[in-house]
Amino acid sequence: MTQAANAADTAPNILATPLRSLIQRAPVALPATATIRDAAQLMSEQRVSSVLIVEQGVLFGLVTDRDLRNRVVATGIDTQRPVMDIATLAPVCVDVDGMAFDALLLMARNNVHHMPVLDGHRVVGLLTANDLTEHNSGSAVFIAGEIHKQTTVEGLQKAVAKVPQLQQSLAAASATAYGTGHIITAITDAVTIRLLHLAECELGPPPVDYVWVAAGSQARSEQTAKTDQDNALVLDDSYDEARHGDYFRSLARRVCDGLHACGYVHCPGDMMAMNDAWRLPCRRWADLFARWIDEPDPKSLMLTCVFFDLRAVHGRGELLDTLRRDVLERTRKQSIFLAYMVGNALSHQPPLGMFNQLTLLRSGEHKGTVDLKHNGIVPIVDLARVCALGGGDESVNTHDRLLHAASSGVLSEHSARDLRDALEFLAATRIRHQARQMAQGQPPDNFLSPTEVSNFERSQLKDAFRVVKTLQEVLGQRFQAGRF
Image (tube, rainbow, N blue to C red; front, side):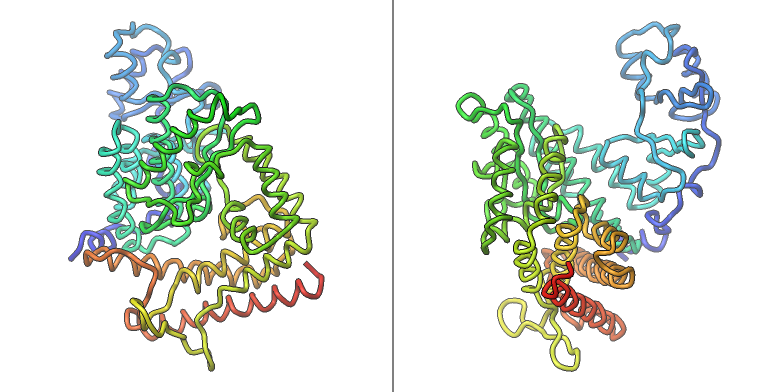
């Protein structure tokens, strides 16, 4: 039996576990007036690895055993000093009404191992990485932690090598595709941020503000273990090519090549920050989007599909926020552009033939299979993007865009729910397919043979593709009638 299978047998689905059920005891806390020695003694007495600093029910900080080692023992600080001198102030927190997935994702993205749980402003518990590592999927926290420690690309390669096993474990534990995508993407974000830190250590501090932006599936938090990279740099408008160009050219090259070395291969279309065309000040990005929207052509539509899905990974996020708001304001008013986008969204058709039979690829390396990505998932991504463009929605994740489309009336509740369910089923099927391939030592791909799944799953595949096809027709008719 494989390790992934063992994980499924021995661990419940941590991603679907309510946080309330993981809280085993009241938080161990001290007032802000306590000393470092008080904190150490309390942690020893209670046999805990951290203590919260709470005053009148309000959380002020957090002290861990690592803080005692690194900030007290290693530096020789007087233990009679206030505990606030060594505390992590305003620590990352999670809401008690969330799911364990929320905590796992926050831990992985922020490289933390202790996280207070809040009910409103009141602290009700403390979650540790150990609470999650009883379940296989908790290893995401430790992969992110290992990434944070690395000082070379070779070290990062070794840390990232664990991601395929993580995906297999998540698939075996029946994690949702939505949750798996967020966790795998959090690892990609961690690698990107670490590469940026290493590049800045070599090159010095950036001469002007910037934000490193993920595009495509990384931006949407929908990655799997098989992915390439799409990224860009948005620079402050004080950027001057003559004075600052060499710095950011070197920065982008180091990061993109580092990602490639770690398995996030260079984008075949060269849509990366190391390409001068995608490393621009904010005003130039705004001009590009304006031209793509006002004068749509096939290339503009392709670029918009990539670069409308943008998410800040590191740096000054306000630069991207301003750009996104301006773009959404413009797209809502451009019916011609939206018409082109709808046409583009209809170009990827689900593989259904007469009598709703699956249409398999007839030739080539993947003969006899269906392409789950380009003929199943991409059409839903495209539909959700059109809804976001037409509805002024700033969401990037496809599931979140469909939720907003329903709440704003762009899609009916029923249609949006059907699309979300179809997306979850197709994406989860793809993840399980890739997990099976990786377990057998094969490179993962997106091509599913119907013989891999049961008759029941084949029937569900057809239902999911039928939902996509129906909603494509509805959206096309709705726009042609001028009711978008």
